[in-house]
Length: 195
Image (tube, rainbow, N blue to C red):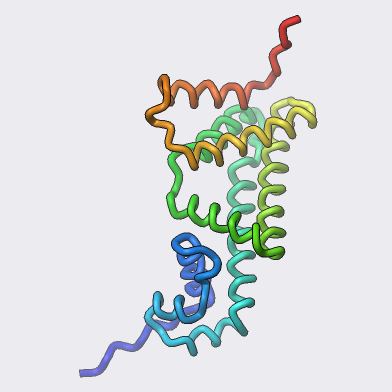
């Protein structure tokens, strides 16, 4: 009986396997041997698509960067007349219970960036794009640039912080707190502080 032909792997399959490995074990485990084993192929298959491990690492970083920036641009694109609703949508999307694998990849990318200048540059580009897009949405809601910048940082500090916290047993109603935080971040006007 003939064996079925082995599926051909493309470059994207290797990159996705590397992202899975990154999420599970960190950047140091993105190695040709480990990926080949995960994909049930020989190491030789890898070299059809990449010149070396560094070529793969560069592709992983670029793929993550492009995906994150594409996502934030899509989520924050202001819709005329619906800017404030869009802002609440962004807060809801990014502060909801998110894809665990996505959170693990985000954390692993940041850990990788602590040790590697190329990864640091990519993470910085993604953070800058996220903050710029959020700031543009706040500006579209009528806030001055300074306040829009501040609220952009507050928004991301909240969504990333809450994604790493397990605050279900915290004092009070956590869902009510999250709703109030949404309003604090998204309100169009900053209340005047008491005299």
